[in-house]
Amino acid sequence: MDEQFVSIGKAAKMLGMSIDGLRKWEREGRLIPVRTVTNHRRYRVADLRALMHEDAPDVARDTRCLLYARVSTRKQQDAGNLDRQLGRLTAFAAEQRWTVVAALTDIASGLNEKRRGLHRLLELAQQHQAGIVAVESQGRLARFGFTYLESYLHAFGVRVVVMEHTVKD
Image (cartoon, rainbow, N blue to C red):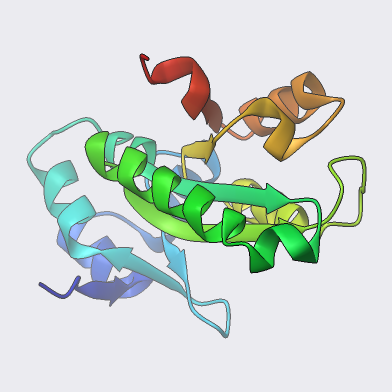
């Protein structure tokens, strides 16, 4: 089933409010649009309908997640470690009934601060594209400084879920 999206003008009409009101809700994290390649806002019709029925406005964002997987070397990637990590994260997200917005990966040391996937994850968090970041273990996100990243993401209303802490053996 394809998701339907509408422009900010149509979304405002559906909700009976102004475009500026929708922009304010975006800043507050109450209703998060998807951005097009040209940076235009598009709103999910399902999210708008949920608001019209007075469901919790943060539910849509709270169930949208970013997956992040990392391996240290190309050899580990070639051995399939990155794919298996993503597979486990995808299955975990499905079990939690989360909508995966993006699956981001890096082949780099956990000490490397110039990881493209990590930088993209931080950008998406700043844009309020998801309410959850799922990682397999803390070390996959950062070898050191995990708490700093977690606090930074929390400032944008994003919580980090570490799969190894939630899955029972």
